[in-house]
Image (cartoon, rainbow, N blue to C red; front, side, top):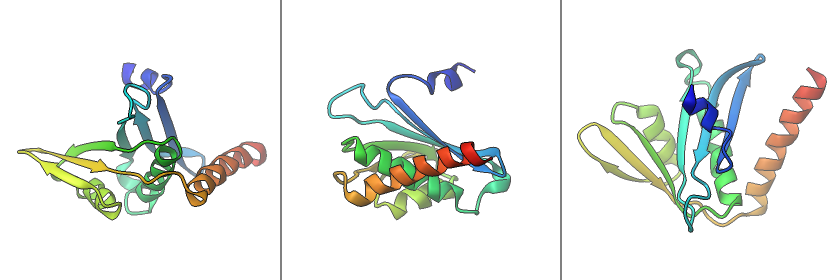
Length: 135
């Protein structure tokens, strides 16, 4: 419960994926302003029955654009070695991997903001608000 309450902190951004009005996936970028330069951690959750539908990829793309648009130069992701879905998503975005016995750490290095990264975030926000208006 305390973890969920901390999503609303000043230094975190969360983005959800809704399927037929139900929250099925979430990405959080935490620690945006703890240090300069910013080195936040990304955390993902996609319900097991919704994996393989592209939700993780869409959330990853959104998180990456949000970080890029805020000038983040390094993102840290941690997952278990057997979590092939997360390792695949990180590898698609040229992550550097460091592994130990059970944990894999992926480090991502976003580029500077681009018109495309800004458009990704604007379109996502517009879609979210339009769903609220017309649902």
